[in-house]
Length: 356
View 1 (cartoon, one colour):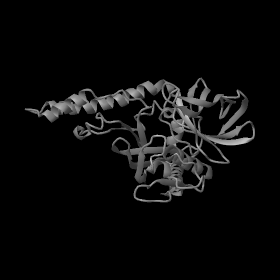
View 2 (cartoon, helix red, strand yellow):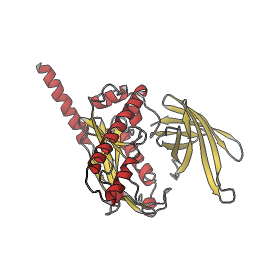
View 3 (tube, helix red, strand yellow):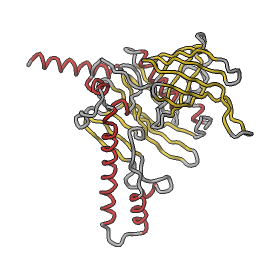
View 4 (cartoon, one colour):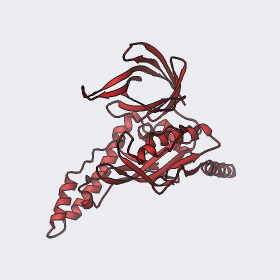
């Protein structure tokens, strides 16, 4: 019994130590509109590099160490979304030892300003972004989606009962009732945000209202909590090891991962794949390590095969994007092997990437 107690005390100390070693500060130059996290993890420099690259490329469209102000695109609306994006705060959450969860608060201003709250979750053993789909067995995804949808439905229906119980309902309440009765609830793991806590995971689904109706929406976003024990029978082997504190890492999908390699065996590049949608479509950003200028890919990933288009420019005359290259490649373990074909010359160049 004493040995067991010592073991768990040691595990607890290791967990605290690992989390203690992860420091987060503000990416510079900091202002009231550019409060953005940058992670320091000297015990695992590769994980640190991958986490910061993911955050800066996916949120700021900035290649780390490429010079200039990392907030230039988002603060001047020269990013691909053509929205002004401001970051007001971040917070490191309390999690199991293998997990880093960061909450980011800010505002996006396009046609109208909209506050946002986002969560980014990383595997501290590898530095990889944690995909919700990788947390569950393939055969259990439908059941977990059902739990999320059931939770949203109950929350909305309970509030509808409350609204409809009011006597002499006002026009505003009638509008609320109509909004909640039409509320979209068919969210899946691919649609929701999420974050980890010490003994539970919280899924966050979008609210029932559009921007014009937001003032009427008393429920707001749907936050659904599940203890790790409640989801135990659905977890994938990867998730079980991740949550338990195991150092062993199971393989996961290429979604939201960084890969490094070469085109034609001599041009070093880095690729960040974004999430893979339910229809198998995805986008990615890559850059030549020499000049660090972002280039966009779009394509499909199915049955371990990538079909990718690299666009050159948008033709106003043809009203369509003109490709620069076509990529066909296969995922083989932690490598991606295929060809990069110049769209004009039809010349093929070898492409080989390896997961960072």
